[in-house]
Every structure is written in C-alpha cells, then in structure tokens.
Image 1: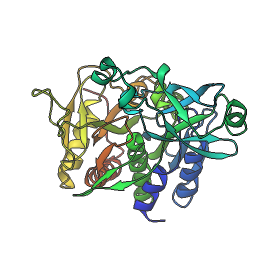
Image 2: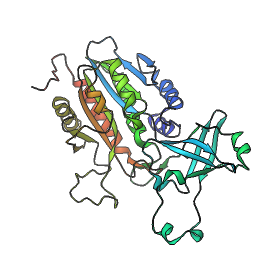
Image 3: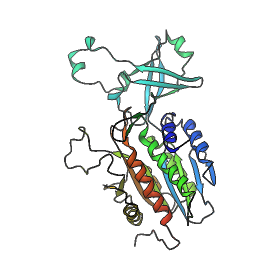
Image 4: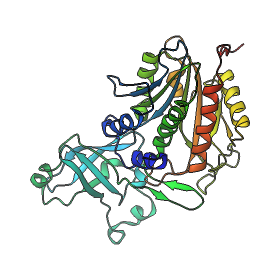
Length: 352
C-alpha cells in the first residue's frame, strides 16, 4: 500500500468517536513494518514508537475519531432518531447520505426532509437546526423491521467517500482529522530510516471530538518531553469567510504553525526553522488562548510538556464535504521529519 492509498483507506474506514476500532486496526496493520513497538492502551489509543528506550521522547498526535450520530430512538414506523457525537452541523444533515454501523455490518440510509412543496413560509426561510427533528430512513417497513437490522446505540457516519478535486485538492468526510493522523504516521515511517536522538511516538488518539480525551491519557502514559498535535485548521479562502481581519489561512500555502500561550517557544522556533531549511511554505496561526485540539491537554500532562501544533488548512469543517490540499499534507510531513531529526542531546526545550 503506498502512502496515498493509506490516506484514502483511512478516509474510507469508519471511526465514530468512541468506536474507533476499525481505523485503529488499519493503523496497526500499516505501521507494523516501520515501528519498533505498537501498543493499544485501555482507552483505545494506538501508540507507535521508534527508539522507545531513548530517555527523551517526542509525541506526535493525530486524532482518528470523526463526528457521528448515535441512534437513540426507533419510531413505530421504522425511522431512526439520533443524537450528535461531537460537533455536528445540523444544517448540513438534511437529505445527507449516511451509513449506520451495526454488529452485522453497514446499513445505508438517508436523512429525511419535508419537501419544499409542503413547507411553511417560515420553514422555507430558515433551516430548522434542531437535531430532534432529524431522522434517518433506512427503508424499514416498521419498527420491527428496523430493529432486525439496527439497535439503540448504533452509530452512523456520513457516507464515506473520497473525491479528488482540481489543483491537488481532496474532499471527504473525516479529513478532520485523518489527515493529521496520516501525517503523524508518515513522519514515523520516514524517520524509521534515520538515526534519531529521541524516542518518537506517533499516536492515533481517540475521542478528541468530545474533549481531547485520548490525548490526555496517552500523553500521561508516554510522558513526552515534546508533544505536537497535528490537526486541521479553518481555511479562510472561501466565500464563507466574512471576517476581513481574520488571519489568512489558504489551502496549498502550507500548513500552519501555531503561536501563543499553548505553544512552547523553542519548539515553535524549531518548527519554523525546519520549514525554512526544507524550503517548505508555512503559515502562522496566532491564538491567544489554549487551542481546541490535542495540544491543549498534552501541554499540561504530568509536569508539563513542550507543546506545539501543526494545522492542515480545511474548508467546510465538520461537514460531509471537507476539503484539504495534498500539498499542505506533504509539507507538514517534511517539516516534522526535519524537526525530529534535528533534535540533538544538547537541545533544551525550556523557555529561557
């Protein structure tokens, strides 16, 4: 399997928050040829390590979980009512194709919507962004028929697919954050051919979408000196951006390197230097508060970690039509490989 095939396989494998096992099996299978050790902890994080006996440790975190829906009620006429797993944008759910993941296998369905002909003027003027009004139609005759295939607690994702757009762009549900997971694992794969002065831990973290939970437990277990979260970040290069004073973030202009109180200044500087030395374009992402990604909780694990964050620009986040650029992914990998291999025994990450 080449690298692009691996990325596509990640995107085509379901991993609803709290139900990440299918994609974690894929990660373990892929990485066993490159990692010195692979462990799955009690939380479900997959931890791939190079040079694990080294006293100094660097952790790269990409979360594997994706937003989803959970079946909470089956009506008498066989429709499935759901709750959100993570930050679902209810406005994009109407008429979406979904897949319900059951013990017996996937069940295809669609999310119903009252026809425009039957909508009131008020309903036509505004979308009813209320998940209580959302139902999934799997073609069941009635409740008994639906219960033969689906049970309360089953989870559903957007129908998983990958679409290559023009100019090196890719669209798929779950790019948040399977591109970050892909980057972490590709960095470890490439570093497996190099001499390292540190132990490198590439972690496929779980349950980021419901509170950064997998990063919290895996960082505690690894106890790294440096921890870098690799996640998507909001692109501004589309008509949905109405804030003319927002920091620009464009697809294809390189990954972002975060700056602010959540970020260790030594790691930030080294990441910028690595970008320059590899001639990799990058963008700055300033933030005045703790980030909403795994770097947030990694930074404060145990006695503290030198944290940083790499962002892959992403359009239409948390929809079924997320868009990223292959180039940004490739540049993020180049920057991180150089960063990891540039660490020497004399490197001091303490802010002085």
